[in-house]
Amino acid sequence: MKKPRICFLALNAYPTIAGTPEARVGGAEVQQLILARYLVKQGHEVFFVTRDHGQPEAVVIDGITVLRSFRSHAGLPYVRFFHPRWTAIWKALLRADADVFYQRCAGMETGLLAMFCSRYRKKFVFASASDADFDIRHPMIPTWRDRLLFGYGLRRAAAIIAQTETQRALLRNNYALDAQVIPNCWEERPSTIPRGTRQGYVLWVSTLRTWKRPELFVELARSLPEVRFVMAGGPALGKEDLYEEIANASRSLKNLSFEGFVPFGKIDSLYENAALLVNTSLPIEGFPNTFLQAWSHGIPVVSFFDPDGVIKRRQLGIAADTFVSMRDSVISLTHDSGLYEKCQKNVLEYFAGHHHVSIIGPRYENVFSDLWTG
Image 1 (tube, rainbow, N blue to C red):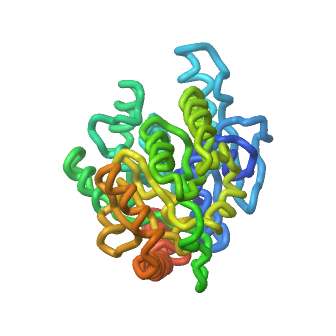
Image 2 (cartoon, helix red, strand yellow):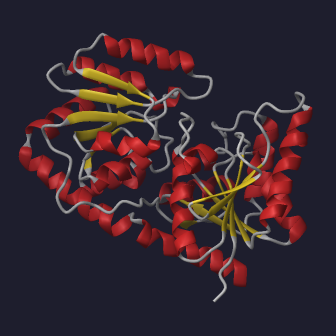
């Protein structure tokens, strides 16, 4: 039976799909790639429209056809928003000729895709990548123009996907719209024997951005000199000074190893010898991929951010509310073997039953198929 052709408008996704050594790899891109690989295995034709990184106009990677659009700095200031950016994206969308289009993360692309789908009578799905996507203040969208385009597009989406009930409530309160909640997914199946060990190190993994608050992890390492810490992450665009600041601060601590940027394909090895994952972000995350990667290894999480309260409710680690409670949580989990083993068991059971792509993928397939046939 014929299945709908799916096109992802994901401008930043090429480095993740191709596995190129670039630091700009985000959780949204990883989630889209996992879903795309699943769809390919189910017999769907899958396309991605991405920026031009010097790749051919169309290239097939793991069964996914990647169509290039524009190069980041091409064109004249002010004018380049329309050409070559808008025109190149439109051309690539036409070339995909998909039945259903998918776009993740709030931005101007949402509005552009809405206009495209209206013009050619196509359906598109918007999926949130963080709580901030449905925050009416739009903390992640820098310009009024892009905020207007996002609002326009969001209201014209044929379906909206939220990662959590918290995001669904934000959408209702701020936009009077509803969403279907579909959690993030992961490809790796959980090990029956946890690879994380209580004697391992405390791990922090993320791109170094201001709102990720990496300085708190450095301070945590400084406050617990008897515990080993490992930090991995590349600089966010425009935040190179923060990266250097954290790298320099790390060098002064004997118990903190700063790994810098680690390619996504190699990051999994850091989890194999970890005891805990720590997340220091402000509460504007969506559902961090790092949580899923840690849980697939049987590694509990200590975090200020607790999506839908799942860490506390299911005892998947400890949700902290202050720096002191975070430090105390690390001490408790690394010293109390009974607590640690209980959290490990909870983590593996929860991950296996809620987040593997074999569970989440069919839910997305149902959304796409319903829009195609409806």
